Length: 356
Image (cartoon, rainbow, N blue to C red; front, top):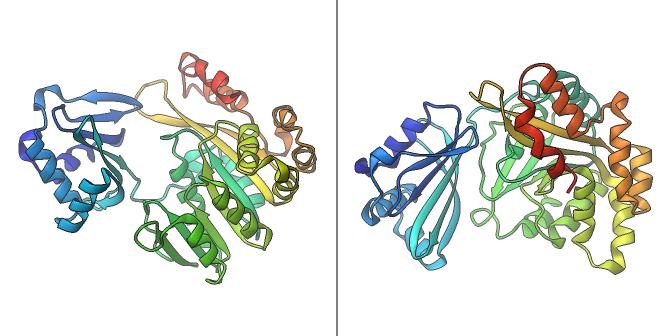
């Protein structure tokens, strides 16, 4: 593969394996990829040269010299790429110890149904109680590589197919391209269609939106804008890199200075409708991976504890609220173990991580 100097030949090979999620290319190293969570090196393919990495980068930049030169100046670039087989990728190009590296995350070309991702009873609850909502803040959280984008694409596609509304997405970069169904869909990419998340969010108020997807909440300004949009009658979806519902609430509030955190807690308590935290783990047969979820619904009890800043009570409420659709990591994992889908040894670490 390394001797071909053709990114399309490399992508064609990894696209044949649905269990490969990421491709790693670096000058002076073997071609590597992540399969079922593990990094695999193609040692027999040889090592990539400086020349081959330059050709790969120019191909990814569509042979546009301005984009290539900008990368050399900025030393990093985030962008989307679609292969000849119409498989989309999220690409990060960067320098490491003076050498060029590229990581390409493979994105599903077709939106999954919610039932493919999560137990059917929870999927039905999402559709009935959450995706029917007209306003509020819906947060999907988890570490990098936990499939947050896959979950959000599934939900947005469901809305696209079932509601007659206007969806605006603000992404960095655009990963999945939606074909408008019942909805109007406007997708905006940071750096290409708008300068920043905050600029795009302010502008979105004048674009007659019903549903807004913000790729990631990274700072106070974006957190404030997302909250304001939810308060003014919009259904807002976004992500954070947090490991549990309680941690997510704390993180959201912490974007703001201490003197206004009480008022932010009140506003968040009134606008939040759902937090979905997720992880990916290997299946028992080690042939694929499956999601593990924690689900928090913003009930009156949750709302009151957010207002009081008694965030430590959220875990207990989720634990005792399974009859109304909430579920914690332990119970969701146990359902997967009982169905012989995962091995208990694979998820021992997860319960510690979920408490952070």
